[in-house]
Length: 337
Length: 204
Image 1 (cartoon, rainbow over the protein chains, first blue to last red):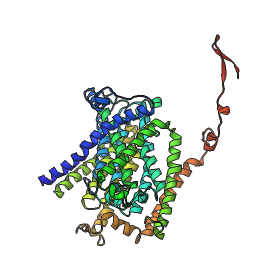
Image 2: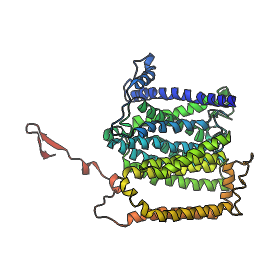
Image 3: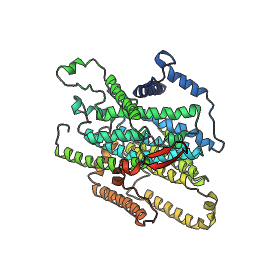
Image 4: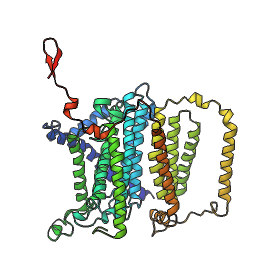
């Protein structure tokens, strides 16, 4: 009894501690990478090449005062960050980092991920409403409309994945893609992958879909009134979600822990010594980098353009491709099924 | 252990359900309803119906209640006006509640659904919950399922056409091809500034 509890909490911490470190250094990487893309240097003063910068930032935020606006709803104002971070961390429970390396290897994994990511919006809603501030409320309205809209496209894209894999278990989805890189789901499900990735970026409220922040119009969106650690928790949740979407892209569409050269005569055995976890993390790191790349490249979408893209472009594309996919599976066409 | 978890979540569920109808602030009521849904989902997962539990969270907590809160937060709800006439509507409410209770009792005591006898099947090791529901839903119940889907689609179309039916004279619409086909010449005007008088004199 006690042993199983200890074992489970040990597994949870083994995921959470690297996740916190990854989030901290993701912010550092973001500032450095975007800095170089914009011909600046980025933070390079604290520690060797600025490597201690995230720790300095965290310490600063820890010691800052948490101010609560006098007209705010105190209870909801303080609950909101918790509501944001809780599902962002809970979703990591089913993510496999290698063959069988997941905290909970459940059968309804895809559904669980969708359930948890759809909960994250409450943190945003409560934060905007409880702050009792116009800009925060505007940010909340934009963000929640956006997340609800793109969740549909995201869900439909994942329906395609589980149709092709024939299972909702994340490990099973990876195993269905066993083989070299052209047998992974990104190729047969290319339209769905593109839809997944666009709506994944929109789900996490990141550039070019960061209208919820829109610092030039509504200062910073739903978390304007937050300071110190409460603000940092929203930040943590956002980056944890970004890393989750990146890792899931690797699992759903890019063969998870399989080497890209799996089964190729000479190259395949040459890379056999690389553990599967390294491949998962490498693939995830590429998508995490794309997030930063997008932010440095694209201008922000307008609200109506965003809604049009979500409802009139992405959802029809997924619906059509699901019908095509059903036909392919039914007829047994294609090398993938 | 399972009993402890069950009573814990069932207790929170009952508490949340009571709060939904007793708190004054409608936003709080909606949030308690979210809590109630979440606890109901946990109870379902506990009896092995993980698909239903997670679907409850995705559909009700993740979408329906979000839109509900979304609307509530934008409305200026006058709680005093809502509490008015509580006694006046009480008889109707009691009748509706009584009818629902009666229906529930009839269902629970009926022969076909042996709820009291504990009909929950043991989760089998070979076929998991998601597969089992999918197999039944798309074979035995495929027509009811499809008809329900069509009715829902109809409701969506009806709701949209109801709001679009009446064209107000001042509504502004966006014509996307028109927006995209604008050229620089149509929108941009270069102006010569007279530096001394600080005003523009002529178009160039």
